[in-house]
Length: 206
Picture 1 (cartoon, one colour):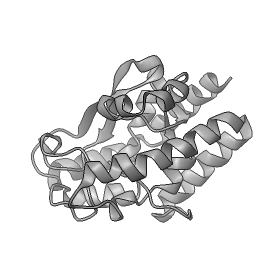
Picture 2 (picture 1 turned 30 degrees about the horizontal axis):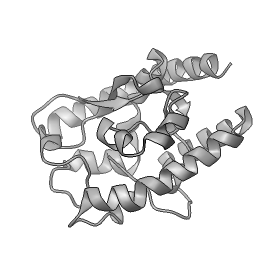
Picture 3 (picture 1 turned 90 degrees about the horizontal axis):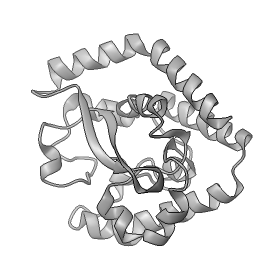
């Protein structure tokens, strides 16, 4: 039932948001520097299978060759990219991932393989099902880039941020229901509209 619901909602969202996609694509091409409209990055999905996460490009081309994590004032983020990230509009193309079956609307955020390999026990539990666009950890850590230690990004993320996110995601996976998923979706949409989530924790944004 969740798979059917997610597919219908994601497909409907892509149709409804098509004009917005066109506007964002034009803004990226005109103001976002040289490069493609979309950014594809390998992430680990259900049962450890890798797929390409689709996002609107918010950074200069080739930025991921320097570092995967970003802070708020990262010079690699374009002017358009700052706006897209603030309102989470760069995440909208992941609806395509949902239609393809790579992701769900609600589920733990997919990570890069090296981070998954650092927490094998936790991801063995979480990746029994597809990852998702949003979940309680995503809501709680929406502004994570503001608190990451700019001098030691990856170490701080692996030792402090990701363990907390995994704990929240595992706790939610044990008690989730269809209605609780709906609540998470509504909270996420409300956060995109306002530009902020009313949560007690900062968020991770890549």
